[in-house]
Image 1 (cartoon, rainbow over the protein chains, first blue to last red):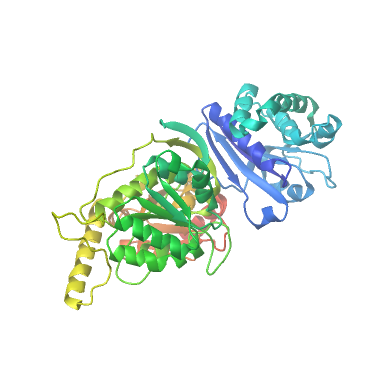
Image 2 (image 1 turned 120 degrees about the vertical axis):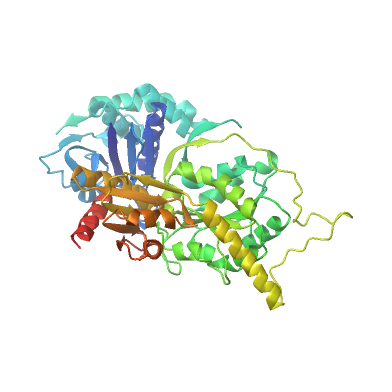
Length: 180
Length: 355
């Protein structure tokens, strides 16, 4: 099993940290993992993306052009990465701010209105964990308990009291994701 | 600290591995994409645990001269920077090589020339392997292609530096510096308290004073010294060549690539094999000394070699010298911080095969 993922959105949406938690969770499941962020000028312009690979085998290239799963959190990223999903692959997106919805017929498309739900529940800071829950629902390769362990590893101690809220966000994300 | 599995950036892995290898000192100046090395060391504050000194110098030039001083005392010292900063250090590096001192220099390469870009590149190959500063000298150059190797090569680079009394370099790039992977960290080693016989540690009555210098105004003596250095480099070429091969047994076409490019070529290789193209990969781990002999052997068996680098074509010259006309050699590369994708590399291998 090798799962090649891109997560793309605005800086501040928790794109890089969601990727980091995925990588930690994969590590908890004894997978090989890689996490390759954009750190260049595009990041300084407000958009961020990260390539995450989870695999049972030694990972070759950490840098990819096509992906099994794309998690897309803004319109710029939709324009850039809809076509980077492999045929038969999966695209997950948040509808918030999307003006041109994905068009492809040869991939499965899921929508999760995580921004709206997070704001309704006054849990805006856990936005990325709603999305994470959606991903875990439709691509069940990471176990919730390992994701919690991953959260503990990637969050500094002073934020550990927020882990139950993150767990709640993951659970809610699993409920609100829908196939388009 | 015990052996431990962690998820780390390549830069952080270098920093942690330096502490665990029992390094005595780090002297650096921040520059993207390697600032995490200094940041990590500052936060870890190993002065409190192992006694390792970590210092942000006032400039790159100051940092390399602090390394020169520490190395002259026989201490395990290092610095790190990225391309423009490594250029600034060149005077110090040639002095260190000329004074036959061990140290570690890490270059997390970004695109150039000049200030260039902060994105990954491999355009400092010539500078790293052919001297960099003035005079006839070589660094021992290791090229990691994973976060694990970023950690492992720190201790290896120090060991080789002390074995040959020669500066070692880890030549990495922004991609490996910034990416996170799993890494097994070795247990903490104690810092050495041994007083090395050649080092300036205070003159006891039992021996003459040790002089550390790269200056000798007598040309006959200087030439003898140059010959001594060359003998040392020949010994490294004999004993220290390291490389890794992928599917070379039946390969008709060979990728030659190091660092990040080697990872991309591994994927391109799988894609090629899926299409029935018998491709293989030779990944030099030591860039100096270069795996000349092995490439010359493979040149008798393959129909061509494609050097893939994030540069205008630098290592390709060493590949050509190694095979000495026995097989076709070409180069494919991206520059300016662009990273080739596996699909793109495969397409260019196909063009190369067509001729």
